[in-house]
Image 1 (cartoon, rainbow, N blue to C red):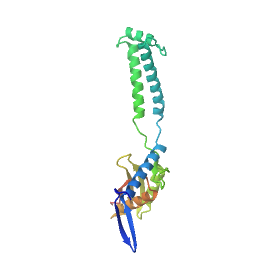
Image 2 (image 1 turned 180 degrees about the horizontal axis):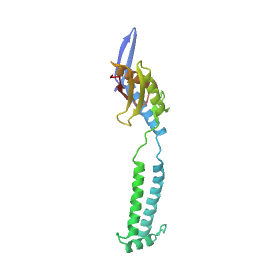
Image 3 (image 1 turned 90 degrees about the vertical axis):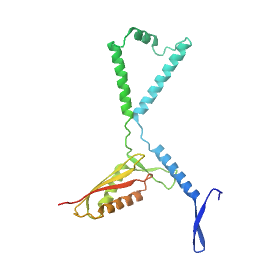
Length: 219
């Protein structure tokens, strides 16, 4: 045991059962490793970024090469820079071709930004594995159906719908349920407990809070 590791324990019969704060730190490290592994294995791929990144890299490389070779007096000539510069010197901002080219470039850039801004909600959610070197997931739809089934198993619930919401922050499960009871009493707590128990069985890598909205008969 290292000097920075605290030990506490209780006596059971003639045996001292001890626990260390180092074990808690090790579990936290394993959880971080598991989260990084799951994020790396199951991250979503944006096709727009995969297409735009090589094009921008190639354009930047060609532009830099043209500028550097022009400064040393031996232009590479990969693009007709002389012809383009002559056309720009002869053109004014109010000319229709210049406006059209500027609008086309601005529109293309706006489309690329719009394609990159929205983040698709992942279709799968990582599970906690016994081994931090293993990664497993569950489908979002399958998880929602399972949680809705857990809510429907509560006596008195006739309809239930579950939605897994949230990204990195404010992770939660929203459950909308309905009952034919006129006086639901603590039925919402029973639904919350049933859904929370099913979540505990599934054991997601990132825990989620359960929020229940219950409708009942008022006639």
